[in-house]
Length: 277
Image 1: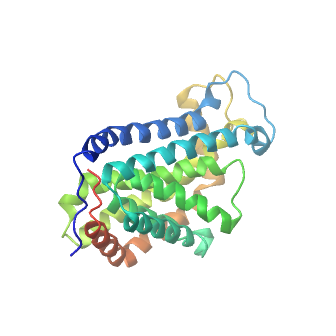
Image 2: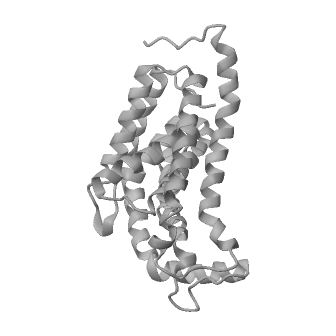
Image 3: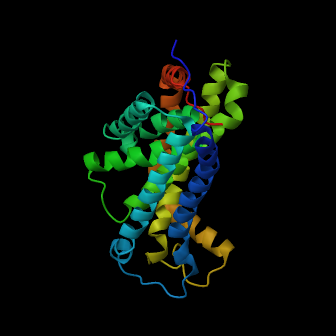
């Protein structure tokens, strides 16, 4: 049995400081993501050009902010949890495995990416879940040609998938552990929700700049209720059909393959003494 990672007396103050710093860094990176997504809705005027052109200038700044804060979060986690090379290697393997599952496609473009990401986040917790999610999507961009002004927004959303899966593991995992099928059903429902939610969130990076009809477009000064109604119409017309297939794929993969993957990752988490409380 692997021995626990023991902190020296000199390392304990650093670990306590990192334990306070990690949640703050996660909140900061999530705050940057929310601002990046939502600030166009507070502008008095919108350039109705191509969204890729309009947001291309700010995308590198958003990506740089995300990368910097994510790196600081990773370093804080290293200090807080007393990670060693084996743990870092395990998380690297999980990240690459999730990225690789984005390449083979199921019907209508669904992939195994979210299935593996959600199970990994559930096992490793919200902070590592965010890092695995954003890191895996970034790595997969090299394989699928996914570089463009949309990428930093997708990285935030993928990180939020892993983060919220980690919250599910923290809040419900202890009660569901050992309950077999019930645990898988809960994770499958969660994966199904994110199958729709991921597309609904990532559309927001370009929707304010799109002019496709008065009933589905956003206009400066529009009230919240009207904006939600317009966006709902836009989402149903443009994205919902594809996201339904992602939802079906997520749920099916969790129910079919979730148990062995969940058991494998849990075993390695416990062996390497990875703590996410």
